Length: 340
Ligand code: 13P
Image (cartoon, rainbow, N blue to C red; front, side):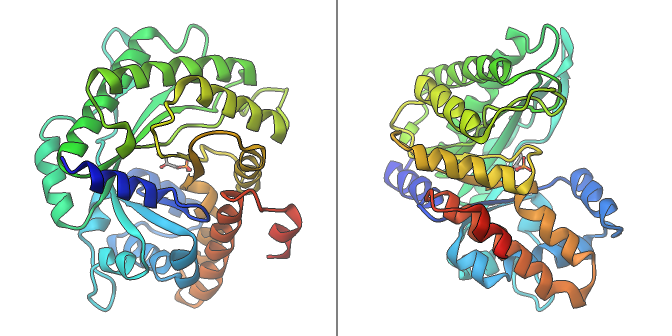
């Protein structure tokens, strides 16, 4: 393991003003996104769409430190034959790869999910490194409900995340450790705080037990936020304060950075929350974004599968990337966002 390289890459991923584009939707998920804009999800359409994003010069050069790819994309070539990975590198951004293989019901708690994909992971990581991947992602999902999550779910997922992280580091790949407490459901922000704290505390215990090099990871957590169906929604300030409070209680300061998932928040909520946290400050880590939906919803809509819409889609993407870049510095304003 090359600890210097891992630390250097992890630090680059969370550098101020920049964040991560999560473009690693599985074939099933991207189909859902394309259905919503009336585009058939063919291999070429997925390539065209992602090529459009990676050729968005302004966003990629100024505000995107890294791109998480799905297995199909890391091997794909742009229309002119250039590997998509090379487009990302040419923009000064780092290619990364989603390596989990989705979820399965937990034996003994079938309403909860365990993320799978550890078998043969070491071999896959070596191939991804050769292809240019310098970081990876593994997402665990934790649902809040009546009697949920169970300790079984929290413990199993934390163990798998740490096992994945250790294997990544052995392959000189920075692991993004993503334990996502879902914002589906009707729970309030206090319940999300309680569960998020439990999950993060357990994850860091497992990372410690499995001797993961904390200076060479990036944490990708949910923000502490009320469930979508909760009648009481917390203010931006409350979300920011509760999230910082939980992270301070659970995340060692050796970790270089936190890159949040957007998890179904609106584009501007995701940006406003990140900005509010960076304005409050007083924590030891960099805090930035690793958004999927909150970066791509606008460009997807603008693109709608039409070549003629590429410039408009790139403009929409660059705008969201710039807004989130500003939020990573605590310099975003709603007025700037509206100005477009
Ligand atoms: P969202 O920002 O859409 O939650 O996606 C981020 C991600 O990578 C989820 O695994």
